[in-house]
Image (cartoon, rainbow, N blue to C red; front, side, top):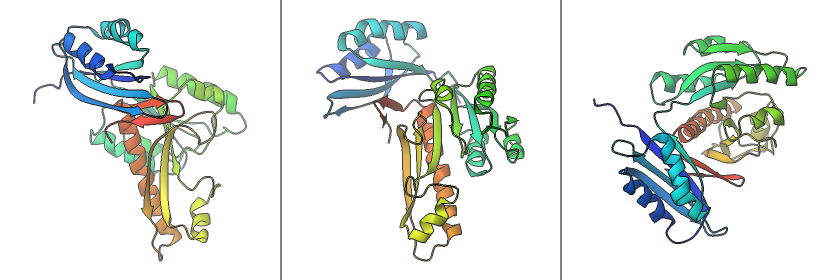
Length: 289
């Protein structure tokens, strides 16, 4: 098979006005780009336009550096656009944080070994040693910090140093049962992805499925979001639910919930690494849904 050409991905949000989409497509055409995908929508409440454009770099006459510079000069400044440019030739590096539950990490490793994702996972960080062998299935380096609660700032400083050493681009919390300080989060704004059940805030604590079972819930759900300083309140990337049957046991609820967590998290990672997510205020616009 011929080698797949590199593509550029442009994410834009801008005050809505006529000609925005034309300005973007004309820029790509003017410099010889062939558009592979184009999506846009308008928030009619705030009158803001969101655009995602992807084009092939074969035949495109601008270099990577020139693409961002000239788009800013020729298009973005004129329309007061905020934008980011990405290139598919850049393979993102992902660090995964885990505690004791293996289902999300195991699913991530399966997808990596199946080459579903164009992403690298050089290390796994945990507050327990339990999943060392699971991480080893992918050959990822495994680091344990068991004294997180009593030495949070010291531990986070060591973790940040590890992330810098491994040149990590984004973090996935694959059922990592610890809270980060605002200082840690500030190093990875909109680059920390968390997954949890959707029983919050009604059923907090270590046994949410048991509490939900006792209350007779009718659906089990999972939510994936970017991490912010405010606990579990970051911009939501992906959500899903599944029905609870009248004869489902607590074990059935746990099984259904963990299956959803794996799927919702994998979909969120896919959207993140393929640059399908645009952040506006406290919410996400996720393209290609």
